[in-house]
Length: 494
Ligand code: AMP
Ligand code: ZN
Image (cartoon, rainbow, N blue to C red; front, top):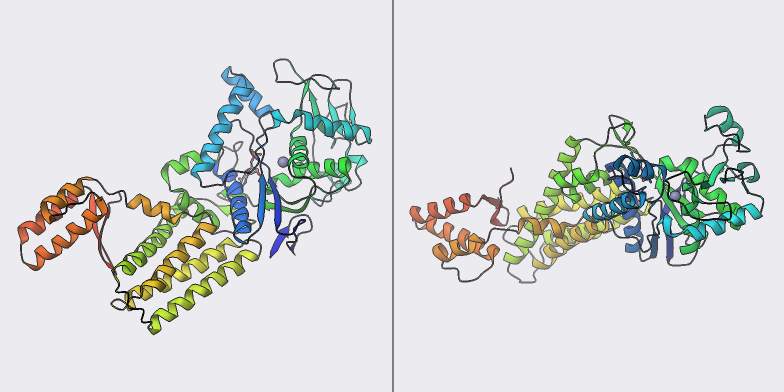
């Protein structure tokens, strides 16, 4: 399978360092606030990449850090009169909660910067020893970019261009304006740890590098993050690894494109953001996933609520197709006789798997993967309407299972969506007992019994009973939905 390596701007064959295994790392959030949906897009992209690698049979080890000490956290703590540790803990928990709501798999390893001080100090000491870093009188330690001949290779910049083009923090203690802090001397009131260079805290670029080395070993197969991290964060990460351990940090660097609003990058500083929480409070995680996966992970993604509403309808189309397939399969006689239409649907299913895999093997083209899935939705719907009466159970169920499975590879949980609709009110049970002689306890069986009873009442011109059932259903906020496979009750959407 092909993956795009940001380092050389080419798609290349994925060649795991250890056969059958993938070790990957994705830079995690700085935990000072709720994350926004732009951050969510990057984490989702790598969740899908990980899921697909697992689907392909790789044993994936996935690590992601929490940056739990940083200027932003310290500033937020000062504003709120709390400690930085309290702020970091609150937003680490909130981040993990939103990741779960979004259906993102937990990392196998989730190191936190504040718990990795020793590993970082070990790496810094080794960089100083090898002449790649220096401590200054204030107690800061800087990485010397000039000492690294490959500095700039990852992001395709060289230091001379950078010097001419970019403004950087002026600091008399640095030997080069692009030297970056590996260790920052403590300021009054800030969290700090003892070190050979005095009390202080680690710089941001240092943590990922030390954690990757400690937990995964270098180089790893895939290092990921948003495209805005290529420079300076990832450039600085890989510079440290090259100088400390004389090996690149990762074989493949992958970067997700920016989520934007009105063609502008979503960011906290611009104020044009929606938190993931507020979006998931209003929309199903599966619909947000569909919206995001309709765009290739490397391309910029234009977010709007109109597009998200579109994704809601798309999701509904998928869910009702699976329901109709299952519904029809259940009602069909099992005669084992295959018609032309049954065989054609079987072929469509096989082709859907092949198309899905071909798209995803091409640098995780999720838009192509979704197109394959929707091709099967179209053929399934056609089959259900054209083959009504001669529905074949096995192939119909196989189509439903294929949709559920392939969506699952993308982290779209159709089972969960179907569960939502099946939350029919329990009052249906007593209503069905009264009007349809139903003796069980399941609301969905009661719904079926009531619909049958209403059908029979109408056929028998028993309008009193038919109307009583109809009114009772409406009073519970339900609607009767007519599908190719018969009538069914569902909650009315506002
Ligand atoms: P941060 O907490 O700022 O380090 O961001 C966490 C992750 O979100 C990083 O991988 C960023 O590259 C990514 N990110 C930030 N803004 C966006 C955006 N607008 N679209 C996509 N990813 C983003
Ligand atoms: Zn990082």
